[in-house]
Image 1 (cartoon, rainbow, N blue to C red):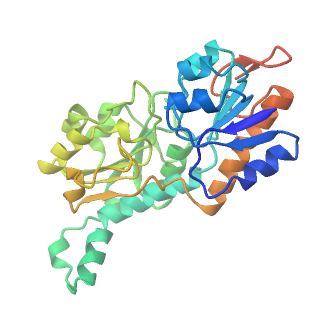
Image 2 (cartoon, rainbow, N blue to C red):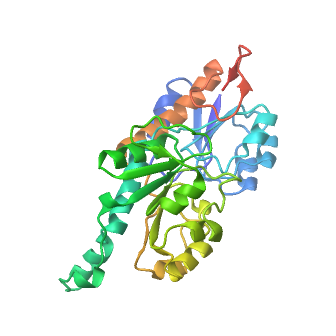
Image 3 (cartoon, rainbow, N blue to C red):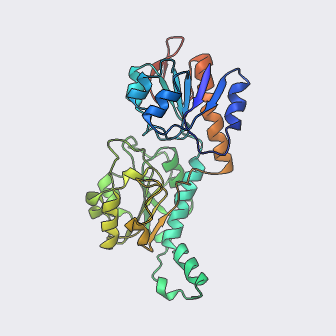
Length: 324
């Protein structure tokens, strides 16, 4: 059996090798960027571990031995899951590796925006020991924080916010009742209208692409703020720019953007009340180790037993049982 890592920007693949090679599975690392790269370099793969490279129908149709593909991370927006299902290829991901890290990062962005930490830090380093230019600063506990998406990360963010005494409301396509004490479930329109700060925790799908565009921003409270640690294309950046320019929004903090990295001339980068971090919310030493180990373990489990812990599609295993 051969596992090919299609692309990877990690320092090493030692953990993946430790999991797979001890079980007699061959491991190769490629750095594929395009469909053509994948087709040319991965034909011999029984399994793929993937980071960013586009796993399209065309790619999968041209990989005759492919049985399973495991993605580093939670999102599957670069994987054609329907095509994989049609072709009998098991897809899996690692949805539980960075829950604490991403929810912590979102909280840190809330504090940074509301307490104006970047501006105050910059001001002092420029020799200006003066709070006045940065007033007003609101008391966080008096504000309402809205959570869009109540999966693992959204729930963790909500629990932590409630634990700090915040008024937290939530919306999710699939959650109509709250299992978190103190969390009020509302519809999307109500969340937009009531929230002083909104934190996004949904996957990128056809339903959520451009979820936050002119229409959504127009329904938000004047002077409200937006946090996004999910996927860049959930927020229409042209609309976000307009909302900041008109002062409809008083600030925004993104860990993800539609183009990564953004152009240095991107107009959002000119705004003092715009914070951006380089898709780093997922990271801690421990989270990276979990991610690499679990992505490799999923592949090994499927190759040996026809089962995975976190299936993203429904494929019959060796015993005729569906992985769901």
